[in-house]
Image (cartoon, rainbow, N blue to C red; front, side):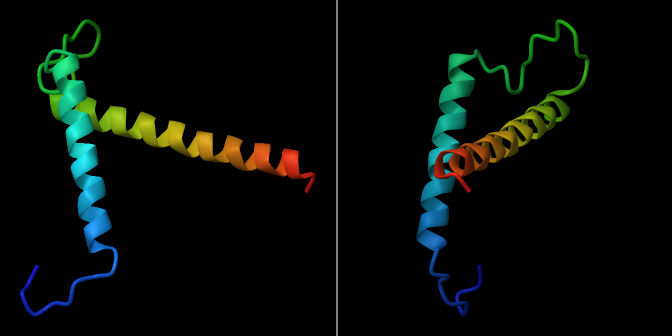
Length: 80
């Protein structure tokens, strides 16, 4: 970021959220024995980066599905 640019209103929140995500990913990677970059490869032969991208795609799908279920539940509960 250039020094002449003004700080965006949400900049601190974005940085804090990214830090939280970083800490979570490092913790999960430690818990799973560095599986992010050194996968077991029982079935898949894809490289580590491709496997991470697949996991992100799956997580994104699950997140969107969860949001749809949440909206449906709210509509059901509110009677609209």
